[in-house]
Image (cartoon, rainbow, N blue to C red; front, side, top):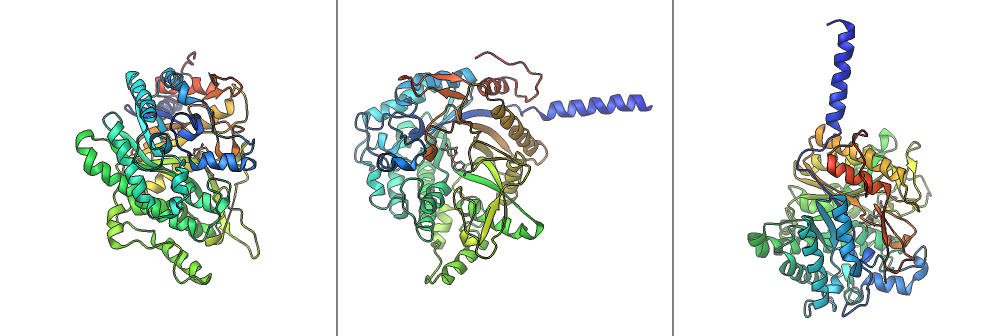
Length: 497
Ligand code: PNW
C-alpha cells in the first residue's frame, strides 16, 4: 500500500471507528427523572400528610438559599398531563419519578391509604403507558413522613418495618403496571449528608452515631422491600428492583494517596453497596476496620458502625436485579495535614478517614459550588463498580448539570455530550453491561437547600406563572435528537420542540 492509500485508509478507519463509537447500542434506553417533593407541590392538598421536608422548609426557611419550600414547586400534582406530554415530546423510553409516602399513606403507616394519592399515581402511570413510556418508580426520595421522623426516622431500626409496609402498599397498587423499581434514592444523602451537615431534613447533627445507625437501617429497609417484591409480587409481575446509590468518583491527589482513595470509595460507595452487591455481603472489611479503630480511639466501647448478624448479612446480600448509579462529579483526595479543618458538605472531606478533598486544577467549575466537570469520572466509576461487584446490569439513574438561568444552555449540552461519550467508552471499551441512562432532570425543580436557584431541567419552569409553564431548553432538543438518532454525532439534525 502506498502512503497516500495508507493515509486514506487509516482516515476512513478512524472516521468509521469514531462514528461507530458515538452510537448507542440498539435497545439502550433513555429516560429522565424527577422526585415527588421536588416537583409535586400540593403539600397539604386533600388528606396528604406532612413530610420531614415540609416541616424543615416551613420551620427553617433560612436553611434554604432563597427561603423557598415545596408547597407548590412545579405543581406537578395538577400539571401531570403536561409532564407526560414533555416525556412524549422528548421521546423518552422511561420516566423516573418518586411516590410521596405521605400522599399515599397520610399517617406514615399503612392503616389508611389515600384515595386521592392513589388516583394521582394511577393517572400518571396510566398516562405514561398510553404514550408507550415506561414508569420507573422510586419508593423513597427523601420525603419521610414527619410522624415517623418524630419517632427517630432513619435512626430507629423499626423504620425497616414501616418502610416494608409502605413498599407492600405501593407494589400492591401499582405493581401490575410498573416494572422498574428503586426502593431508596441515595442512602448516603439520607444518612451521611443529613447527620453531618444540618442543611437537610431533619437538622440533627450526629456524625458519629446517627449517620451509621441510619446506614444499617437503610440497608435493612431496602432488603425488606426487595424480599417482599421477590416473594409476593415477582411471580405475577416480573419487575426489577434495586437501590439508587450516589457516586462521587475519588482519584488520589498523588500516588501516595492511592490507598486512601480506595478507602474513600469503600466508605462512600461500598458502605451502601457492598452489603447488597458483593459476593460476601456485609460491610467492606477495610471500612469495618477503619471505623472500629476510630470509634475506640474516640472512647466508644465498640464501632459506631453497627454490626450485621450473619442472618442479616444473608438477608441483605443479593437484594438487587440491576445496579442503579447516580453520578454527577468527582474529587481528588489526600491525607489531611496536622490541624486542618474538615468541610463535610458536599460529602467528601471525611473526618473519620482523615481525608481532605479538592478539585483538580483543570476541572471546570460550575455555578454550583460542589459541582466540578470531570467526564472521565463516570467511566472510571462504572469500571470500578464492575470490578467490585461483577458483570451485572447497570443503569445510570441520574446524571445532569446545574445552571442558574436561561433557555439557551450550550454548557449543559456540552456536559451531557462529554459524559455520554465516556459512558459509551465504558460500554464499548470496558465492557460494562449498561442498558439505560437517565437525565436529571426532566424539568427545573426544588433543588433542596439550593431552593429554586439552581436549575437542572431540560425544561425551564416559570415559577411566576400560576400554571408553572414549562419551556424546552436547547438541551431538551439535544436530548430528543439523541434519543431519535442514538448517536452523539454532531452531524445529526436537530428537531424542533
Ligand atoms: C441528587 N453531590 O442529589 C438527588 O438525587 C436529586 O434529588 C438532586 O436534585 C440531584 O442529585 C441534583 O443535586 C445529589 O454532592 C446530592 O455530589 C449531592 C450531590 C449530588 C447529587
